[in-house]
Amino acid sequence: GPSARFCFSEQAGKGSFMTLELFLQHFFNALTLGSLYGLIAIGYTMVYGILRLINFAHGDILMLGAYFVFYGTTLFCLPWPVAVVVAIIGSAALGVLMDKIAYRPLRDAPRISALISAIAVSFFLESLAVVVFTGLPRPVHQPEWLVSIITIGGARLMPLTLLVPGVTAILVAGLLYIVYHTKPGLAMQAISKDIETTRMLGVPVDKIIALTFAIGSALAAASGIMWALRYPQIHPYMGVFPGFKAFIAAVFGGIGSIQGAVIGGLLLGFIEIMTVAFFPDLSGYRDAFAFILLVVVLLVKPTGLFGEKLKEKI
Image (cartoon, rainbow, N blue to C red; front, side, top):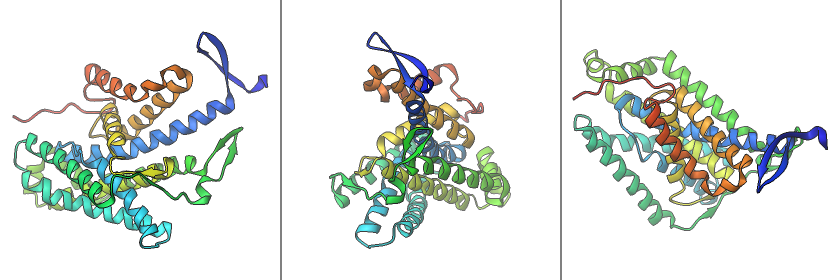
């Protein structure tokens, strides 16, 4: 009815009204997508903040986390919550192993060497997944309580749509507590400022960096699990585009800033969803918006919304 009409949009030369229910639908979809981008972006920003390294294999950890849950429930018949916990722990361990094998030996090498190593790890994990899991997409089981339809303000939503932002908020709050109120967190901050001085002060730098990779990989796995529930299909390359988008979100928010990564992810999610909602004819360019945003941010404010200016060491 007229009371439900919310805003005016132009489509195909004809005026049309978006109902409040439809707006709420798009709003919650954008919030869910933005929360996922933000959670993935945290992994990029944590590693970069400490090592000044873009871990391009981060999106592939997302993919492996989703596969761990899939095979935990289908092959090993684990209850879904148990499979989720095992997948997160396994992904954290994989992150530590990745640091030990691919990044730690290059700690004192030029940064381009570590960057090439990160790209190589990404390709290796994707190719390994194709060999082990095959390249065929596999359907994901969605627990009934997550996908039964509920109604909020006239909008028909799945509980999963509300669960994702809630879980993201809890995980981010926990991470901020670790970073700002625990000794390992304070060590992370010190390493991000000056790794050599921190080492001389007796801080076990390699262990703290390994912990950073473990936390980032655990968050990536949690993101992958929720991504697979939201878009119920998994395949070896499922982490590529979410990884790219999350990297853009991290740059947008200010890479190196946890709060910036979350806000950048939320803004990117809203830009993608709302642009398509208000301008349906542009839906085919949805992915392009993210990369256009990256170019604009790099041109206008290279450090992002919350980034700090860094003095590059020669």
